[in-house]
Image (tube, rainbow, N blue to C red; front, side):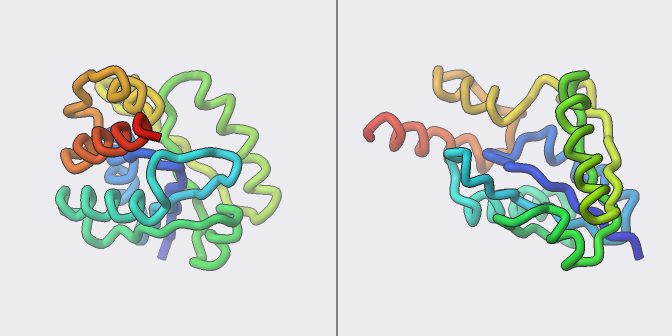
Length: 164
């Protein structure tokens, strides 16, 4: 059985993230989506909220067998814990490859886990969590960029952000 891990911050999960996760699920026996908690970043949504949103989006798309979890440790430690032999990362543009390659090499050195890069769907490659948040902050429509349940959550989170 081949177990794959799809790590990311998923703050929030986007249509591009879901595309990579769902394509990954076609190739591997067991897929774990892991919300990586980075204490150096100030996320918009809590890890539990991000896990819940990803779970709901995947269930709605018929991917009920994909596991969703979070970790504040190293992704390689999570991989060892569940017996994963591969990390799958989506690549949007050339800059993504350069940023992800170093991490892939470190992960292999730490644990022997290989990283597989999946190119983004060209229709979705311009979408990132940062862009989604920026568009929403300026009142833009994020329909189609995120799962349907995320848009109202963004509006609410941004209203709370403004009131602080």
